[in-house]
Length: 94
Figure (cartoon, rainbow, N blue to C red):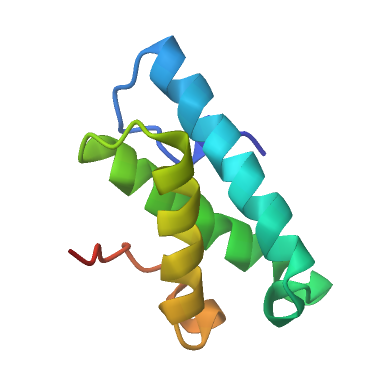
């Protein structure tokens, strides 16, 4: 599912949408490689968490690919357990 499906109420131009999508794919690839998040049964919830957090970062003006990816991965790593909060709105840390 493309990241645009998660941000239906967000208004991003096509360049920003592509940037957020690329950051999401990179974050997902890295998350899959991490044993903590490699559980196939929970992949959808983990993808949802990553996508929502990247969109929130984008809404707040972040446009750096590496910061988007790392911010999403940090959020995922600090969400305990990830599946309980997969549907919750992301909380950004300063």
